[in-house]
Length: 503
Image (cartoon, rainbow, N blue to C red; front, side, top):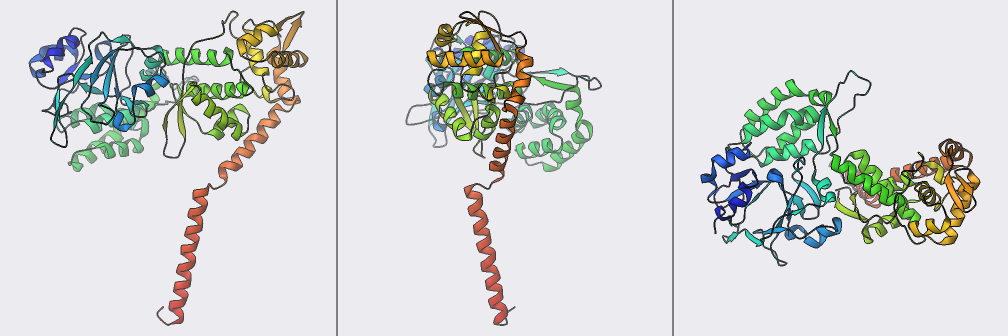
């Protein structure tokens, strides 16, 4: 069954579909930059292998590759609300079965950030072969992409949309006091990868498209990225092009544009923060787990993305807890399905994504008065434990201990003790059995964290963590000892040679 049999599905949605190259996964040269109109005019070129450009025509394709550890179960761990949807099997062989392409619909304003990993063995390719396309594998066997779930594509869950949505770039007046620096959030890497993926007949056009932005963002580092990405053999042309681009564009782009997160990222992270701040955190460790979750969401928000790298020491400092306590909280959050480990960097630092679940507390009165959930005031004497969570719950309308217990997932004694501590500190006002956030709570908190040792406790923790980071790790110590042994052996050998007259 040739790809043409399925082509109407994509043409009706005005997708960009480009011709493949033979029985391979490659794209035919000369079709870079095609629009849906180009696809309609060149349907005759799509009668063999054909590729959908991901994100066009309101379609999103997620690639699950079991060869690299991907699975549908793993994807559902990060996106629990993932629906059944149109599915194509790929040609990658694996004992657990071939990989799959999951096809979803997305809003028209979403620009998909392709080549973005969603988890181990799961990503969003730039383009994917249509069902019916044939590929000859390395062992000489011919395999075909097959439509295995012939149903309409389901709408992508909001959290998935946020995970794949590319941010926007806005013009910034660098002469104003409000000028901001660019945080490219991986844009340069994605553009360099597009250059790496370009075929022999496309490289010049792709270079012209991507190089100004890469070098504008990264300068000489960007030029090195393009050198590493180059897959051709005309190095004289490459160096000439790089020199010209460096002269024209180095440092220009950051002065003109600023990266802004997608509105979907902003909305989903706001939902995640609400769920963490005002949701239920049962058990003796719930207060610690809540703080770790909030610290990771805060790191994602600062990055303008749905993921953020975070070491245990970084989290410990952000929440004012010991590293061992923070590490145990992270492990629990992953096990309980609140956090997802997207990947682990070469230095061992995990990259986390908050999992957005069902909200258990009704937000009846809005956000509480201006004290951050991770403020140093919650490290102050008498205000640790559940006080931050109970303060937030009072701020959204949980007036009595019994309602705090139900909303926060804590015991009645813990709720009463925290309310009493907040009243005694002047952050909450009690009227009979009801409680309200004090109108001057922000000013009171500013004094409390200094007077009750919250600031001092955070400074001590920062110094201790800084000392831990400066201390060599086990592998570094072993390497230093091995280098010292080698040096000593060389000195002994040289001394012996001198004694026998060789040196």
